[in-house]
Length: 401
Image (cartoon, rainbow, N blue to C red; front, side, top):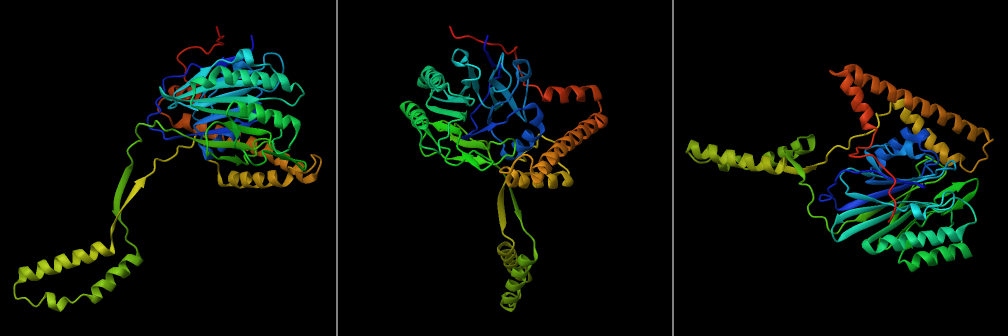
C-alpha cells in the first residue's frame, strides 16, 4: 500500500479564530532538526504546519507531535528513502484528513491533503506537495489536477503549498505549462521572492497557490535547511465570536506625571477657595479641586492583557542565544560558499555543537522537572505523552471507494 496515512483527530472548535496562519518548510530530514524546528515555531506560532522532505516512515510519523501541533495526515515513501510530506495542526482547529493515496507516486508526486472546516459553508482545502527533482513532469501535472478536481468543489478556499522544484522566477516552457495548469483551476502563486539561495544560485521553487484574492505570503529565513519557509494568513469570514479581551485599568505614576501635578498645583488660586468662612465648604472645594487635578495628572489608562505565549521548547541560555544568532548570521554569510571553504566548515561544526548543546539543555530541563515533581512517575508519563499526538483511535490508511 502507498504510505498515505491520516491521524484520528479530536473534534476542534474554530469559533474564536478570525484568521489562520499556515507555514510550509522543506525540512530535509525532520528527526535531526526537531529541537531547532520547535525553537523556530516558538517564534512563528503557526496554526497549521506543512513539512516536505521529512524523510520519515509511517510508523515514525503517525504519533509525532511537533511543538503544540498534532499530526493530521502525511505521505511516507514505502520503498524509497527520503522525501515525504506531512501536515500538523493546532488542536483547536477542526480538521479532516482527506485520503489521496491513489494520486501519490513516490519519488514523482507526493501529497498530503487536509480540509479545515470553519463552518458548514466555509471550508479550506490545504494540499501539501513535494515533487522531487526529475523529468517526469506529466505524471506530476496530471495527478495534481486530479487531486484538485477531486476536492476543490467542496471547498471555498484552496491552498496548494510545498516544494515543487519548478523555478517560477525563470520564464521557461515548464514554468509556463505549470502556471497555466494551476490557472485553469483558478489558482495563482502568491510567493514572489526567492525561496532557495545557495552557491550563487537563486530560485523560487517553493510555492503557495490559492484562489483567494489580495493575500500576501511571507518568506522566512529559518536556517533549518537550504530552503526558506513560507507563511500565509488565511482570513476566516464565518468567525462567530472572538474571545473576550482581558483588560486592566490603572494609573501610571512617574516623574513626568508628578511634574504635571506640581505645575497645576502651583497655578491654582487657592486663596479664592479659602475665602469662605464655612470650614465644610473650604474642605469640599479643596477636595474636589485636588481630585480634579489628580485625575488629569494621573489619568486612568485601560490596557488589553495579552495572554502569554507559552514556549513549547525550554528557554535557551544567554550563551546559546548568542550561538543561535551567530549561526543565523553565518548561515546567510556562508550559503554561497563551497562546502570546503574554512568559513563554511566553521559554520557546519558550530551547528553540530549547537544541536548537541540544545539536546543537553533540554535533557537538563526534563530531568529538573522530574526531580522537582511530587509524583515523579506521573511527570515522566506527562513528558512522554506531550510528544505524542492525541488520538482516539489508531491511525490507518484509508482507501477511496
